[in-house]
Length: 338
Image 1 (cartoon, rainbow, N blue to C red):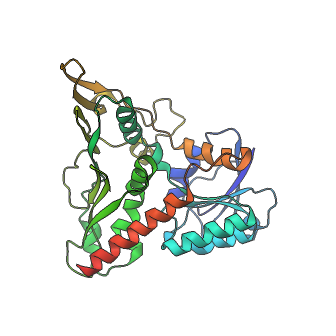
Image 2 (tube, rainbow, N blue to C red):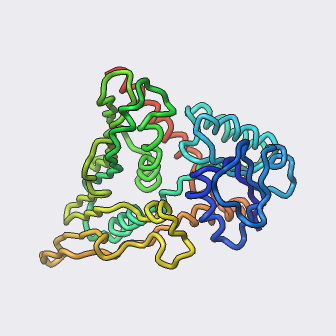
């Protein structure tokens, strides 16, 4: 059994964390700390408190999960580690790579676990793309395009001054950069195109980053001004291509309070399946739909449990988290220089 507590009781904790930690019978939520009342329905049997000492000084609590604004991640994570608590930190992990290195060093010194909550490694579209690439049917991979688009122009239009807390690159690229690093590894080089479409000094509301691995290029692109989203993934190989138009559906289900307790939670329907087009070894043309892999953010909590309780290697490596933040920092510098 892994006994955990949450610091933060807002949308993130109740939508993207607790529905999944509660799926695992060997994880127990004991305490939830929030300095202010929350509109979310209380969980039976859980202690709610406005005193952080009830989390940090409780010897039963083995893991503290931080579900708070990113600006508070570093200070609270350090406080948890100094209190002897294993810590899971919502992404973006910290504001700077230097802060991340300090936290990892402190955790190592104290023999504690600390990790970023990179749940989107378990998105169905990303898992399906991995399955296709690993099958070898596309041959050598030449190019991968990953899109994470929105049409929410009111957000950048309402933000008049740049800050890291409202940075689109900082808040959103942490998903796709992690996916790139986790599957393709560390790039040989990165090309940055980070923009403030509404003018200098405003929010960076657009980014296009290219990661180079020899002849292979992996691109992540995102904007607030895409009235029709681009495909979630497009993969080009020497023998064919794969297009996954729609994103993982877990978030959509959570937004309408359709919970992981439902057997079809987060699952794609046939209209969401990706299209695989390729020439086989006999020169024959194929075009077919590919049944999507099932995404499941509970796998993130399973991995955390296995690391803390069973001593397994962390699924999110320290160096991946540090490199992710370095790439974001470099992208922001490129924006400021343009």
